[in-house]
Length: 352
Image (tube, rainbow, N blue to C red; front, top):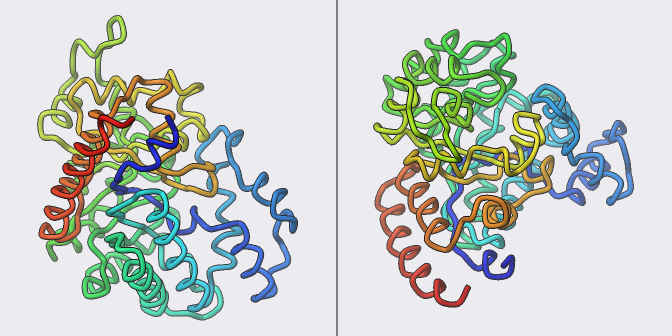
């Protein structure tokens, strides 16, 4: 079914720029900037090292980003990585994407955060112009870096460059989302929407804080909301108050199945609750998270859902439509794409 899935139009809300580099680009940029600490210099060996399928925890998984961010410290490098990201997403059938990154991870060689943002935006715009893949930016504040309010202000000033949202990312353990309320208030007061990583490393308490202390409009991952439900014979039969809130208010969940497996939340694809949540009426969207570290793509994620959770053409259509409806980008573009996606799924449905 993979060939057919590759043809499906897709929408992506959760993709990290520094988690999606081409291995060849990592090697070339490392040579350009004189970075000598890569764990391997042969392409297949480096690709194997970057694949974090056996990492087993979010903290261990995040260690691989030391090397990608190390080669993303100049404006040309940032522009190139952003440009290639859009090309790669478009080649995977993505029609709409929100790519996120943390500007303060890219200032080690003297760039100002505003220069980082400008370089990434230039690459994104070039990729969009070439492919037609509508691509917008989300600015990440890393919980462990303690500069969330400054990052929030940068996000607000970046609207003209394609910034459509603000995110809290990084390790969850020891960094409760409620601690960053002031940063979220900055963007909220400026009418810039918030999405927050929650329910990935820690449980439902982080989801509650994201919603009620950070005013998040979407939840990054959010899969541990299943812990506030009762499951009987493979079906959600009862909801706790938080799960009911998330489902009934249609709070979008930015689900990334392979990433969740690699960080050790669930042991097998079958154990992942994506199918339960989708069929239980939650607003599930499907995402890549980190294409390099998880060796994934939207087509790969779709194939996993088909193989292990029984997703069919109408289900892929539904999650794609949900993602477009939940996007932070301008509604005129998303409405146009919804029409195009609906038409494409009607045309392709009988051929899969």
